[in-house]
Image 1 (cartoon, helix red, strand yellow):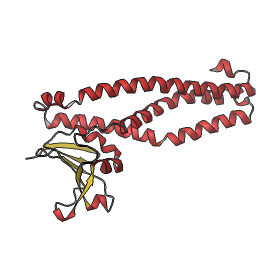
Image 2 (cartoon, one colour):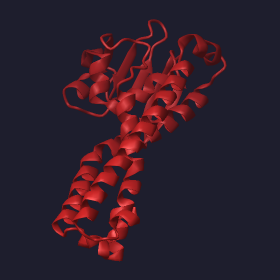
Image 3 (cartoon, one colour):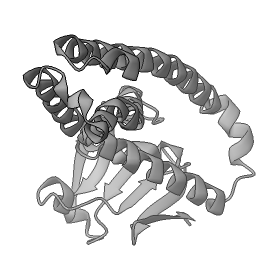
Image 4 (cartoon, helix red, strand yellow):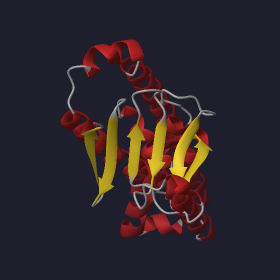
Length: 227
């Protein structure tokens, strides 16, 4: 990139903007290809018929490990997605500075280094954000979006965090609970889509098999079999 910026004039500012946009465009093109391959692979792995042969031999410990790995990755992707506005603002500021100075900022070694490395440093953030966006468009639960799910008043009315998720074996239904009460009078019914839309990080709970319960304690999920 230095070759196109070394003149330190207005053309350098235009070159920086153009090169940055081209780098991001190429990056998104490649990321899109990888994302499609990843989604296709994960979809084949989550096929109910293929899962049936492995679920019988799997234990709660295995599901717990998988769930916590997905939870960790999902939180990173979500944080990257939320930081997108910051990346855009910084990109605008850098380009505004290059045009206002008419490219003279590239004549200072340390400033030029910041400008040149910025697109490359932000690419991992953009990739994570893009992954989160694509994953949010894929519905992986065994129940449809309009299917009913059980929750409680502490979540639906008081906006308490969900700490307990149950996947029932008898009808494949789901429950998303606060863990504060077992009183049936506190129960509420919402759609699966509504509960996941309000709590997007919980989309990784699709891996929880029927007849199992997951509880969030100290930022970690613990999976157990429902007696």
